[in-house]
Image (cartoon, rainbow, N blue to C red; front, top):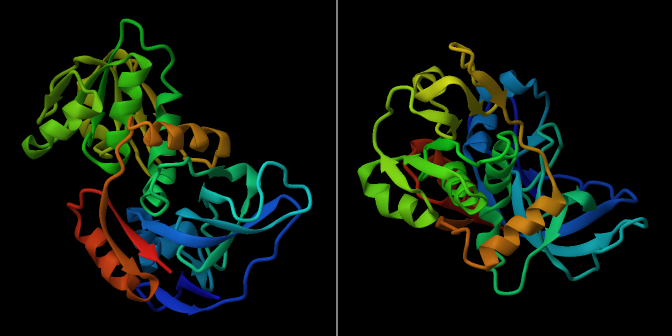
Length: 296
């Protein structure tokens, strides 16, 4: 089986042959149809990324995927061979991951792709939509409270705006002027292009502005960031951090929202697995609107 890996001495992904992962009793073996390239993949493909995560030897790349179930463990209920599914893999030390021809994931981490949802474009959903949802889950009830989403036109931020608006938040999105229409259509009540003073009960920092975003939080408010951030608590502000976890049930709900048109799938382009370096370079350059997909 061919898979992209990161290994010592290389700052770009390497396509090589690896042994397929064993199938446990609660696992699904999925023939991959598409897998998204996220900034974390680009980071893990570098020597610095490998050092930060303590990776040794050749390890796999890729988190988001869609594909077809080709084998199911003896204890798996609810999935059958031939099912189209999406899943999130979060084991950076695995010898192969989503940027490969096939993968084994826990059945609990997978969800069926609803009818009508593009089975390739769906690969852009799992990591970023789950990150947005799990960040919002930390906030408590929205009634009478205001929320600022930084990076509101980005992969996590765009989903956060849509999910927060649906949940009843008064949402402001921080985004560039060129992205006002997208953020407004996602459900933001207001779009700003620079950070204000302490005006919001909650800031969900999808843009990873860290301490630069803290001044926008009211005294005693909440800041929600993502791993690796080092925002400092001042003015009684609560600092909360999201470490995105696989969740098949939640993913299924998010996929249905996308199928219903409430979450927008944005694809920057597709390339073959053999041309993965081109997609990695695009993501590394920044400024992408949507995800690049690798097609085995």
